[in-house]
Amino acid sequence: MRSLLWMSLLALTAPVGAARAEVLVEGIVDVLVDGGNNYAWEKVTLPGTKCGNGSQYKFFVHRTGSPNLLFMMEGGGACWDYDSCSGRLGILGAANPNGIADDYMTQFTAKYVSPIVNGADPGLPFRDRKDIVTKGWNIVYMPYCTGDVHIGNNAKTYVDTTGGQAPLTWYHSGYANTIAAANYAKQQFPSVQKLLVTGYSAGGTSTSAGYYFIRKAINPAKGYMINDSGPIFMAPNANSLSRPLHDKIRSSWNLDSVFSLLPASFSISDMGTINRMVATEFPNDQLAYTGYTMDYNYSRYSYERFKTPNDEASIHAYWKTDQDAFVNELKKYNNFSYFIPHQRDINASHCSTIITFVGAHACQRMEKKYWYEYIDSPWQSWACHSEFVPMDVFLDRFINGNQRVRIYEPANNYNKEDAGMSILAPLINGALGG
Image 1 (cartoon, helix red, strand yellow):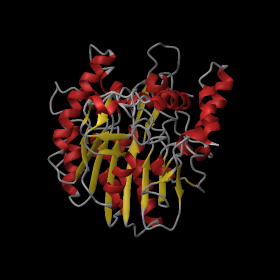
Image 2 (cartoon, rainbow, N blue to C red; image 1 turned 60 degrees about the vertical axis):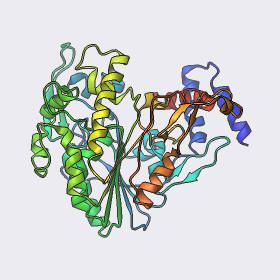
Image 3 (cartoon, rainbow, N blue to C red; image 1 turned 60 degrees about the horizontal axis):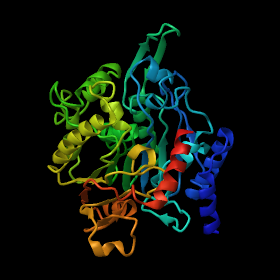
């Protein structure tokens, strides 16, 4: 059976018409990720919550009877002007500019979003599905439709600078939505043992930015936080690489009104101090960052519209500089882990916990092979000369073992030279872009 599936993957790489390709891609991805999830989801609407276009905000709950709760923050861009909030900017704009449908959890993004939500690293041809630490947990799933990383607090009117469209009133109401959902979760799950707050991309940013509020509301016996690819980098002065982005969103989303509620260990003049605040306010919690050094998605948000030069090589260089400083900051706190692989072609090396954990592994000593190591895999010129740690192992150690894990993988072409990745990545990318 798996041989037939693999042949199907190969067949999909042949040229096909656009409409047929879309159907085939989603069908094959359904096989790749072993069907995603088919949970029973409860839609929740609460007064005072809304999407960016003013429609009712909706989040979704899956109940299992477990003592543990996953609070999942969905990603999907950000916005601070007409083009990015209206949807005209495309992939670099805000997700779901038209609001959240009632059947949202059966649609592609939510169904296949993450092994963490689905409770298993998906099975692939020649690779079995593997249950992971969050299997069977209760879930609060937060769709993203406000363009403000779930933390804004502003109603803003954006003008179309082309003059072609009427001004757009946009509700950056992420903070109100997040607080309402967290309070609802406390009512529904009054005695949470393990709370994992996580998210990817913009949802990763909101995980760090909103963890204090969510954790305080739910008050679990033990708290865990994993920010996937939404780092809030240090930006202590006007010359800091991420400062222009921070200043822009601080104004557009009225972040002072939210961050003024945080403890004094956070400084609004340097949003990167959110990491220090979370670590020191919750010294017994397990906190982590994961993401790729070669990220070319979130990194574009950070610098492309603010820096020159802004070609791909320059953006990678800015990101590496900020990431190095970020890691040095996290090293100061005993409860912070980091798990930073170098690159995978899926989603432009953006997000290590979405869709599949293939290529989401890290090795502290990924190095060029010795001559005798080519015997087993002559196509691969890289080898791990320390422990090879897959994402599911990291999650198990981090959550079940309460271990601090710190791996910052050096530059390498291990995933680039993986023959299976060259087939898998275009299929996943086609589905994500479709």
